[in-house]
Length: 313
Image (cartoon, rainbow, N blue to C red; front, side, top):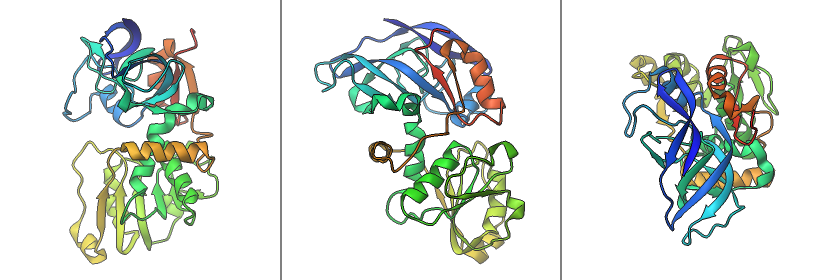
């Protein structure tokens, strides 16, 4: 089989190309992708060439780990059937092209245990499930405190705030320095950090990915407070030890979501506890992918860019 996919041949060199798919087996599904999201975190680092060495990394590669679509072929061992709608966190099913992420494609082949059934009515929002699960993973589990301050009002920051409220916790404060991203809060407040005089936050979640903020954040926590690194950081992180020592600061790294996060997040969305509304600001046909990636990475008004693989132009 062949399909059209977004191929990043080198940093900032991207095109829609025809690629060969590996043959599916009895444990595999063939999925026609309807929508795929563009990540402004990890995918941007591949786009700029700033991604640190990573297992399975190399060019040319097919990006994308936020995709949803319809099963068109189901292996005999899968328990799925054609017509099922699923979320797919990427795939590595391409000949001659790295599929480190592999979700930005019209069609893909994936093992059935990689996908999650979702409601077809989610439409383009179905591609947001990975981001929502990432936010949930940062917060859920033993000895994890919900945030009372979130740094950054991008999609991840908004999801962290919405999940905090959904958990029944007090509404968090959110910091944002970009005027274009100050709006869109629902049940919580967004302010510029310069206007905040609090220095007693118990749990600060950094969703900005800006490691240079660590010293400022240490100064904002209460004694014994926690700073959660929920972004992706390309440079070594450092902070002044004496202030952290005086605060007995704790640092925690939030890793990527696990399968149980995906299932729990899907349930929250389906029962209405977590809304994905207002997070997709841009949606274009996949044929316009080169321009879409530039917009996603360079336009501050773009929270989430979605490629529509069903729209021909």
